[in-house]
Image (cartoon, rainbow, N blue to C red; front, side, top):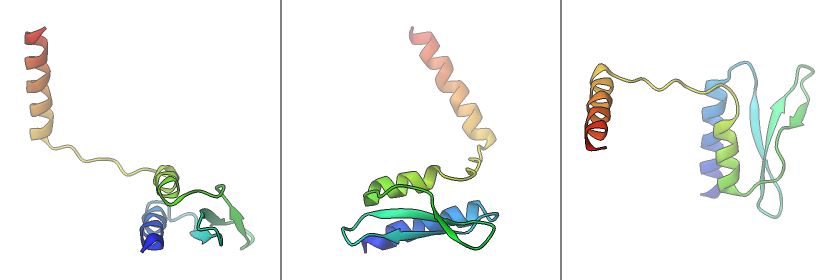
Length: 89
């Protein structure tokens, strides 16, 4: 179960960054590390040994990030909230 969360993070990273092929490794002590395939086909270690939660955070920050889509209604709501906060001050 622990490695499922980590492998899902690596799968999301591979989907965001198709230019590189990432995989994960796990030590006997239960720590995770991120691997990236280089041009020659060898795997290089990208991260140090991390706990599960640290690994997921590191993997989510690695590579290009998805842009969050914001609707017109969200923008209007933010403006409305900003107006209310300015009126209270």
